[in-house]
Amino acid sequence: MLNENIKAIRKSKGLSQEELAVKLNVVRQTISKWEQGLSVPDSDMLICLSEALETPVSTLLGETVAEPAADEIKAIAEKLEIINLQLAQRKNTRRTILHWLLISLCVVIVIISAALILCGSPYLSWDYSDPETAVAGTAFHGFEWLFVRAAPVILIGAVVGIFLTRKKI
Image (cartoon, rainbow, N blue to C red; front, top):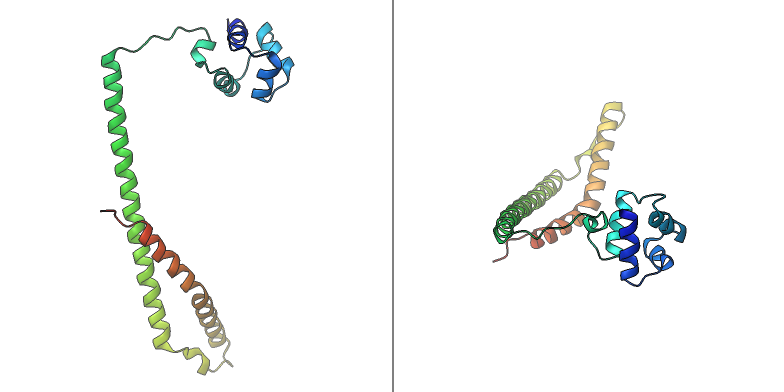
């Protein structure tokens, strides 16, 4: 039944086997095998075939498609509306969480910057003859060096993110 439907629908659309094969990125022999019933398309290819022939998969498979009643359409529309509202609420919640995380990130960067400015790089006056002090001073200097270079970029990105995630009135 599938093989006959593929052939009939292809011909009704005025497509040759070669033209359909080009649309599906397969060789002409593949289309021929499907139409002869020697092989069948896999599920992904069946979907591509239905799109290429502009025909529902159920029609290709030979099933008759019953039109849903008006009450069923109304029920489906109501369910879709509820789903859309839930998705919109989830999106709004995620946006709000991201907005506050970005604000928190800005606050943390400002606090760390203020602490580093107030400390004034105390490790510069340390006695590095003690190995533990040398390791601590090197780690502190490495953190300070990385922070001074990365913080402005992160801060600008966070401010832009705050602007983009603000609640629209």
